[in-house]
Length: 340
Ligand code: ADP
View 1 (cartoon, protein in one colour):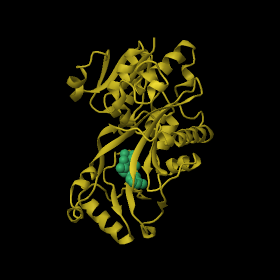
View 2 (cartoon, helix red, strand yellow):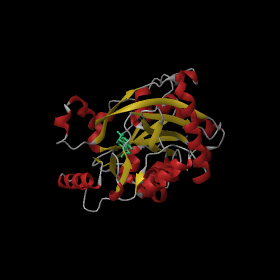
View 3 (tube, rainbow, N blue to C red):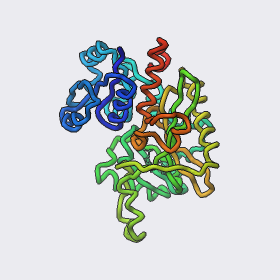
View 4 (tube, helix red, strand yellow):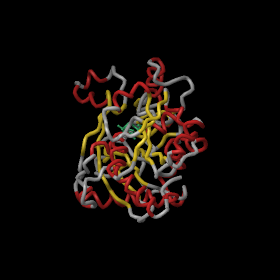
């Protein structure tokens, strides 16, 4: 019997509760320091203890998971703590979703290519700091959750920002930087599920993120803001619905993304993904990111979102939706179509 496993962080509770609701036994890869937290939840059946999450790919841990017929549900912590390349090449266990796409998600150039091929409007990228001619956000490579990002609107303010960021240690001497136009508007995150078994794209939910300390800036008078260095580390998420007239475009974006994944990164998108961006002053959506796996914003919707009742007659979290797909695949001997 298949077991559903995930790392103890990010959206583990939702994933394992959803698995349990679908009748699966559950396994948590748990850091010892978090044992007390997770022991509070009775739907976690088994634990695999590690000191660091990167240990999960050790042969003895992989073989213990194989003995249990584990399918691993990847999330942001697997990407940030183990690394997409290591997951792609050195983690010999079935993963729900496309591990190649996790790699594309982690690489800024590949990410930009896939987004452009999807037909998404993306912010202008600046090849060199000398080219900065408007408000821009300077990012680091890798999913580090917005830490060390800073803003600049000219080569001069870039240099100043970089010096400040280096001084505070958020940007290291060898950090690879990525400079992108900063889009002013309403940041919105759209969460989808692509079912390889039915071939259908499902739109599940929307969230907004509270990021520190940038979401505190609006509470300060403008003249007090100048001396501060913004950071974009997510603290939590809040729910959102968009005007119904925007939904048609939301589906178009999702479909464009799924098509591009199938063309560029076969076998394409499997399961949950998220398109992340900003509605600008013309109500046009500019996408700055995607995640090719479940995002923590779906933690809002353990009982379903404002949109999931249109598709399902029972409470449907993203975690549960994953388990439903695994169950369907299990019962038709097609696990290979939903795992890589
Ligand atoms: P990470 O993937 O490391 O979490 P993101 O690229 O999602 O980083 O960016 C973190 C935050 O920075 C976003 O949630 C958003 O608030 C802000 N941000 C990123 N890119 C842009 C952009 N082009 N325009 C406006 N805000 C942006």
